[in-house]
Amino acid sequence: MPEPAAARPPRRDDTAADARSLEALGRLDPQPVPVPYAGLFIEPVLPPFIDE
Image (cartoon, rainbow, N blue to C red; front, top):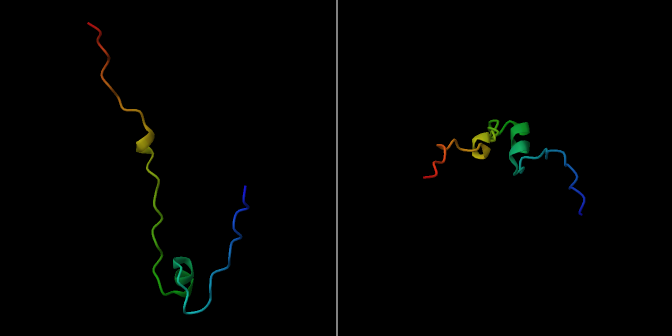
């Protein structure tokens, strides 16, 4: 199994292309972090089965 990539410090120059570095430079507003939706994994409530 490959080792995880090492974390890099944010770039400090004006040509930074990633959002985290642009936020650190003050050139980009903080980006929203998506919230996971747990409703996808909840079992649906079904009516009782009637065997006739």
